[in-house]
Image (cartoon, rainbow, N blue to C red; front, top):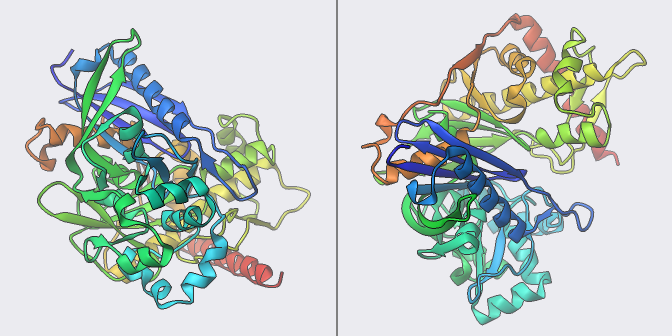
Length: 501
């Protein structure tokens, strides 16, 4: 067993992962635990904070068992976590005050018209890096401070603590060095003026959010405290947490996209397209400008835009529409037909994101005939995903002045050769897929090792384990443009139909 091992924790929307690597980047242990979501009312999506922590603890234990190591063999750990899913707890005893409200929750939609009609709302994108929306933790917290008596009481007494799951895990599973998060997660609360590197006080005042309840910003590499990890035989030890980062930032870092213009798309519950900007800070109207990472020398930035839903749409096709019973059947069904049969699928189940930004849009399938099969619908969905990515990348190239020549992909639907080939065809650029898919958890472990001194700097980090597959475009430009034009027309028709309701 190597002398030093590093733990990476990826606490995501759908589940939690743990990976253990050595100083060569070799993976020794990996585990995953699914995370249920709660739907107490229509459009409400919550998670039980203690179930979140338990799932992470179980994943770590299983990863230790797979690695055949002991907890004391782990030199340091890093945490990457879902963003805009906020946790609230009492500082006195560290117990949760309420369920976490996830970024998929829509209960705050009624708050948007009021705030967007004010000067604060109009200035929000410039100060925060992205526009207000129902997904935003800031609005979740405003709702809590209006509706949740336990949160209101804790705020008045000065005991309220607010954070994303990375901060919660340090409280639930260990001892934080202070109430803090890294800057990428701080920005994800929707409360931080990243241009001035401070919480946006007029915004806090408007929502009556106490600044004392909020985590303090820290760089990516930092002493965040310790968590207690346990081996399958019950042996436990405290592991220092020396790195913290947002999940999409971690995916970009793990894929090695650390040069200006490097692009990556992580397919998960939604698909997140990201382009690394290094130190550039352009002003964007439709694309989010976010902190990337701060390794101690300087802050870097990225542009990011999510599609609507990806994994969630596939789950709907399985559980609600019953197009298939097992995810493994998707590839066979989709390859059984030569094309989408002129179907257009717009998976706007929770609205559309960049560059359309229409939260009231809804899912639409156009062109159905009696001759269509399940495979046509699945292929139409894969095409819609590629078209959404194209719309985002074109917007980024035009507005930020960067040239994009290829796309790296990971997670979820990228396991499908057909989905990757369709993306290459419809984007008109090569799509690179690593054989090792757990890039986010792996990045958290890399960052922990970097903080612990396993490598002198980011230029000496090991490459992703395994090989990569490259999918080259196989569709001519005329066919690509015709399909994209049809899809944009369908989006316009869907929005026109929605406006008439």
